[in-house]
Length: 289
Image (cartoon, rainbow, N blue to C red; front, side, top):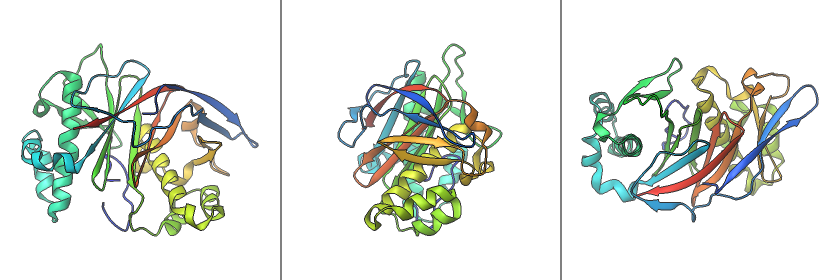
């Protein structure tokens, strides 16, 4: 995952086209569930190839993915755009692989946001919110707000950008060596862990990662960071819909408003998710080269 403001899985390091409509699902004992009607699926084949990011219109989110293989020859160029703090952080990595992927992820993020703001990548200044979620401090355009989120796993970076509302994204490599059943029992709600165990053995890993990326994207959209436990809400999948609601025996005040949540295929062996505090959201996926 390697996400800004997200927790890490132990065991290794590491758009949908058109608008969707949310519905509130009522369940027993005052539990409410939010879902998005899925009209199309973002797969590894329908991301738009481009080199020119732009600002999403109101009600839209642009998802940007980038592959390390396309940028490995430009790492020095990307590093020149990083802040002194980012350079120092990259230099503290013990493994060259981790250092290079940090430079790649944060350099590409600067490329995307600078294009949206019409400035040079090196002039961007980031700050942190109360719970550690990064935001763009400079430049600020009062008439044009921008929200973003970054995640990276393996060789892929996933960036979400919108002008409408707080959002979170997450990406994970499905083949990562993790004890997913133990992690699910430790961090997930009881119903999520049970849902994984009830699946055929060959499907459990995928269901675990589908659940994980959805929960991480939701927490990052909320912006409470590690103060919001993963088991304080539940994600479920029904009839190709992704739903989020209260976990059994717990009420999460963050769920009293509408939420958009969707999962998708980022690339072969990679699954991603996007969450936003809104009822409807049009998603477009781009491959940045």
